[in-house]
Every structure is written in structure tokens, then in C-alpha cells.
Length: 396
Image (cartoon, rainbow, N blue to C red; front, top):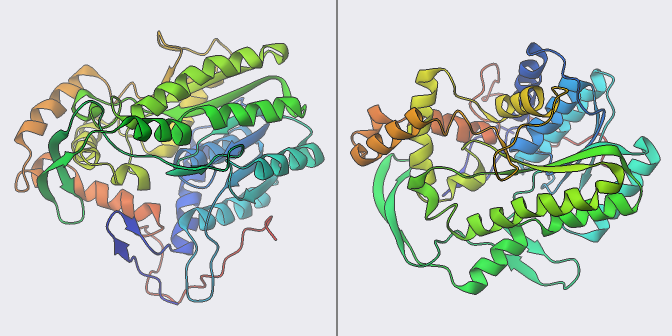
């Protein structure tokens, strides 16, 4: 079939297998170009199919020569219907890892469930024995609690009052005002259950209890802080409460791993175009301005550049991992530079539908959004008949 992008609001309903394959190959080439990293050799990545999770799996495998087990929840293809992009990404990753002589297996299922945790543990026991790095990079809007069976849904809301500010429709370039009603306590509690640290702690408890964590094992979860202009709807909103919980959980996990000299960290990463961030009002306008400035300064990074730098300059230097006063790794340091943020604050005031064409990088935003689904890559013939029925080799 000829596969074209079909948009519905903030999501794309199709994905291109050859484009996703090219995306994975590009990331692999970038990591290899930066040289070897003396990192972990057996790695579990929870949320391994897109974004920072995929970048972590690629960096572990092609930067450190690691065996990787990836966990994700993706839609498989069916005749005439494409898979989700994460499925095609994972298929391409496994093919490339196998070519390079690297162990790579995957589990497709609900990472919040006890069943998938047990499946991962059994696979580690059978194939790897133990893992020395666990990446936690889940980004789901819903979670069925494995103990209570209750389905919790996260929300994107401010706390304490209605929030009104600018946003942009990145499809049309229209800059408008948006208002978001304040969250109630149930909204906050549900968001913390879905996006907080409870499931991360459950994973680490299960892995430790099963004896599949190596001595000195490290685990990392990803977070975001962001600037003042987005904080009402992000860091001081419902998601922010969940991120606070996630960051506090790192200390609890470190305590529970003390017997094996293990450590848990939260890495605060930069703002990037993802399926999730595209749906958050205000964020697309902020990212458009941020991209313009960071590209001009030569300090722009995508997911793979962020994670490669995290590994090479923070985690695996042979020295103590540098953290801020709250124990977090700050790989958002270039985004949060005072000169960058001061310029964004100024441009924010000036941003209109007409001026954003010059002030921001909306074209870059759109390109990154299309790339998420395998579209817009050089070297891919998008007019060619393409087989949508691509399988992940390790998943029967």
C-alpha cells in the first residue's frame, strides 16, 4: 500500500515502516559517530519503542554494546492498516541489533500489569541472568492499577484556578488564547497514580525480589521541569504533581536497593516534540520558540542527542553522577540557560499568527512531528508501494 500521513487533531493515524526504519538507522549512526561509552551491558528499557525510551535502547546497544530487553505497548499491523510507529521502530531496532551481533528481545504488553513484569523477569532469568541498568520511560495517559483493577486517567490541568495563555495549532500556525479549567483533587490523584513513581517502584521491587538486578544496578526515570511560561499547566499543574511524586520515588528506590549498592536517578530532559507534548496547550508554542533559539546557538538536541550526552557526560564517566540540589540529573541545562529563557520570554510576548513565521521554528516542529510517525525522512520513497505487515522478530 502507499502510506500517507493521516492526521486527526494532535495524532497521526498512520505510520510508515520504511520511515521508522530510517529514523532508527539515523539514531544508530549518530550514537556510533560519538564513540564508545563504557556503560551498562545488560539493559531493561520499560517504554522502549519511541522518544527517550527508544533513544536509551539505541544508546545502550550501539554506544555500549549492551544486550537489551525492551517493553512497550504498541499496535501491531493488520492487512491494510499500519502498526503504530513504536512497533515499526522496535522491529527495525531488533533487525539492526541482530546484524551487529547484539542480543535484543521485546515484550509487547501493558507494562503496568503484573503479568508483563513477570514475563520480563522470566526472560531476564532465562537469557541474561541479571540486568545492570533499568530505564523507566513510560508515557501513558491511562493506567489500570494491578492491585485494585481501577482504571485511572491522567489530566492536563492547572491547579488552583483557570489558566489562560497563548498556544499555537502547529498544523495551521494559528496563535490563539486557550483557557483550561482548574483540576479538582480527583484529577490530581488520578494523574499521580498514572504518571507518578508508584509503577516504577513496583518494577524495581519485583526485579529486586526476583534476584535479577546486578550488584550496583542503576535505574533512571525521565522527567521535565520547563520554564515559567509553561509552569501553570505543566510543572505546577497535575502533571507536575506526578513528576514531584516520581522524583521523590527515586530516593525511596535508592533506599530499597541499598543492599545491592544500587541507585535510582531522575534525569530532567529538555522539551521535545512528542505525541504527548503536542497535546498539551502552550507547549507547542514554547517548543517552536525554543527550537529557533537553540538551533541558532548550535545547542539544539533531539532525543538521541540528549540521551547520548546523558550517558557519556553524566552516567558513565567513572566519577560520581552530578545532580542538582534535589538529586536530579539535569540534561535540560542548555534549554534552561538564562540567556535562552530570557529570549523566549521576550519572543513570547511578541508572538502572533503573523510574527511566529519569523520568531519561531514551526517548520521544525512540524518536521519533528511527522518524523515521529516515520514521515519526512530523506532517502525514503513515500510514493512506493510499501508492505505494512512488518513483524518484530522476537515477538511471535
